[in-house]
Length: 397
Image 1 (cartoon, rainbow, N blue to C red):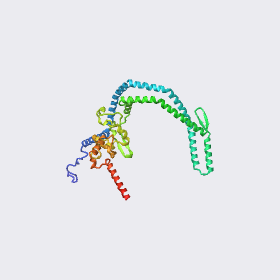
Image 2: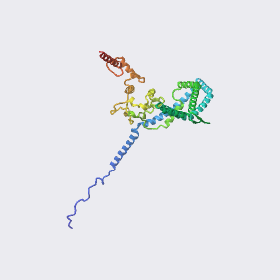
Image 3: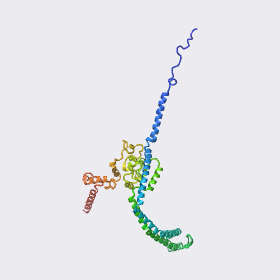
Image 4: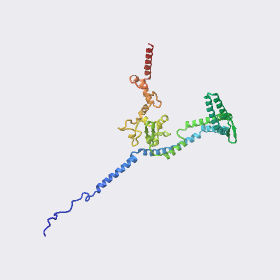
């Protein structure tokens, strides 16, 4: 049979499809692993890597709580020894005796003062309202020119003083004129002042003894007492792990330094050895300086430099990288931060090294060649005086 000339010859099967005939499981597996690792890294960086302050705060709570619990029994023992000492017991007995001696008269004075203040409260509103009305009429009288007008205002004043005013006391109601109200109000205030003065005189011995006892405690009992330590433990129980931020709006300042340095303002003096060797948790070395430079008002970076906004790493927070112009002052140069505000102050009590350096600058004669603000005031004053003298001489000529 003859072959059809139109029938194709040879292998008629199509070529292999690069997608349908080839497995993509290998590339998909590699991409999935890379995607999973990227997700894991992103979660780690978001939750831990960019937020080291979370771990700091959690570690601080554990270390500080353990330190407080360890400190509590020691303080309790110290307090017990002081409270059982002969000196304290004698002062406490003297205080109780003075309070017992003043007690009966103090109770009587409190009762009398209560009655007086109830009467004053009943008199106060009608007396003050009428006195204000009379003062306004007196002002009108002084500024009225016609005789008829003055007589009319005087009549209004007399009518205002007549009342009558019904005053409701606790057990009775009285009808009084303004003069009676004024007299009663003045007498009650004078009697109240006498009773308050007597009260102060009677309680003075007890107050002096209490002050003496408290001074004895402050001299012999160091640190916090049991109640204060218990309060700090309660604060740690409710401690919230979060960004600790100081925002001084008028200065455009945002500092988050205390997100890591959590112990800076704690009332206890904290050392690294007290908190597991973590230097980041120590308290501020100069508490008196914080009392005159409240961090809520001044922040941290105006004195110490550094990047107060950064919380992702120590390097960035301390400003020790190329993109930050004001790195944290080194410990030995910490007082240099005082110059940012106290540039012209000659002596700073809280900056002895800086003050000593300025003393050397002046005593060594550096000021003779190197002009510096704050050291040449006398020279400038003499120059001004010479100019004034020359001006006066020219005016005389």
